[in-house]
Image 1: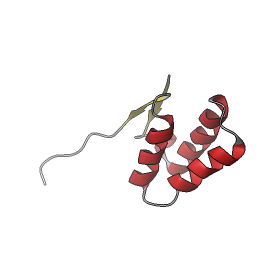
Image 2: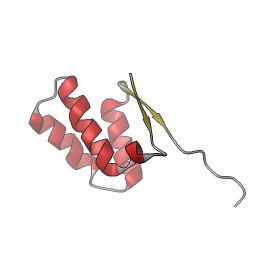
Image 3: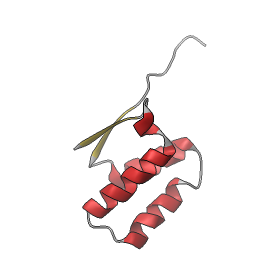
Length: 72
């Protein structure tokens, strides 16, 4: 199980795309399947990217998120 801390450099969009390619290959996806996932990841916002990443690779990765600040 891989761990990714979204609070640091591993949490930026480019790093997550690199992880998607690496994990995709490791779990047996072909190049076109991986690129389809990446296209879906990059269609929307950063939150969408995280959501698509988790949908496709969540069983292989633990993602640590920044704590939400309170007191608006």
